[in-house]
Length: 288
Image (tube, rainbow, N blue to C red; front, top):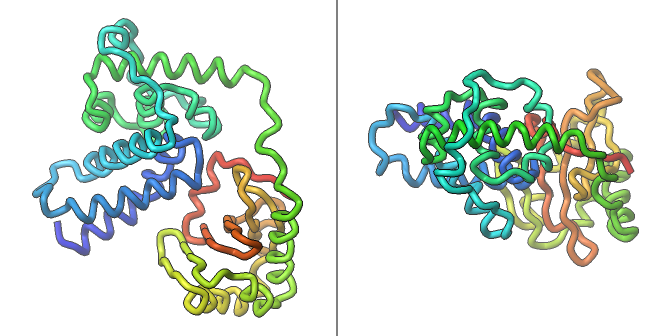
């Protein structure tokens, strides 16, 4: 596979990898971070891996391991269960379409192997043998984990929904509102003035910039497209975010979102999902 073919493969696989990683981590934002780690490891390991009979499966195996590493770092990984326990239950081969509708946070409440098996089967349509190769578990263990995970997800879906992430603190809400109002008014000088000197920009799947000078240039594209977009302050998975609406498409549902981090009253990170609209799937968004 040439370098160009490999780049094309990564670009084509990114939405599917995100669907997997977001559900493994319970967060569309954390899922994107894991996808980026997956991409870096894939680039670093491509030559050592040699010819790949199943490059998609190879990428999913990297993503699976990166997600487990992420969860271990956050001390959120659940026990996998023994092979003997998992082999006690069988699962049908056909995907369950209702499972894909479960929220990202709900998936996180499953043990890791159950979670991986359910996502790969019912959300992404992999076969049991492919799931076994990706998770490095036996096929009987995958079958059992799949069945147990489906049952548990249905039980969780029947539970009352909680109120969701808490409201943003008043100071953070105020800073977010000021940022969004700058976009609404087209006052991008005021927006740039809110940036920390070492601010980071992640225009997901496209580019990364660091430093106020470089990140300031990013706002030029928004300044030139004022008529296309409308903006609102909101929260994505409890994080402050600017919701972006495409006027010609819908003013009811956002086209994408921009997650912001604040430190010391300034914007320290801009996480723009303009080119990663797949991240909207299953995410919890609230208007402020």
